[in-house]
Image: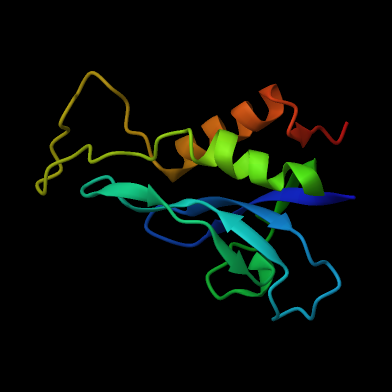
Length: 134
């Protein structure tokens, strides 16, 4: 059995990006239908990995319409591997700016939730955990 894997966005000062894996597709729309994999926090304070069970992101206030995009599938038996070998391995963004907005290390580009998602996706595809839809 495999599950669909999506990226999804929530409205914010900068849109928040996450990976959503739908594990209970037949559940009611507002019921828990899957799991959201993302980091929370700011580039001022740093971020932490914070997965959570969730209804379909399209039903949540703040969801960016049209942003839920299927990127892959994952075997049911690979969910734990995905969490342990990808999400827990890729470090979340650290504090990168001061309260006045000055970069702590101007030689490095800012690394936000979207960069973390891209690194997690890349690792999951490289390890064969995510299977391409093509």
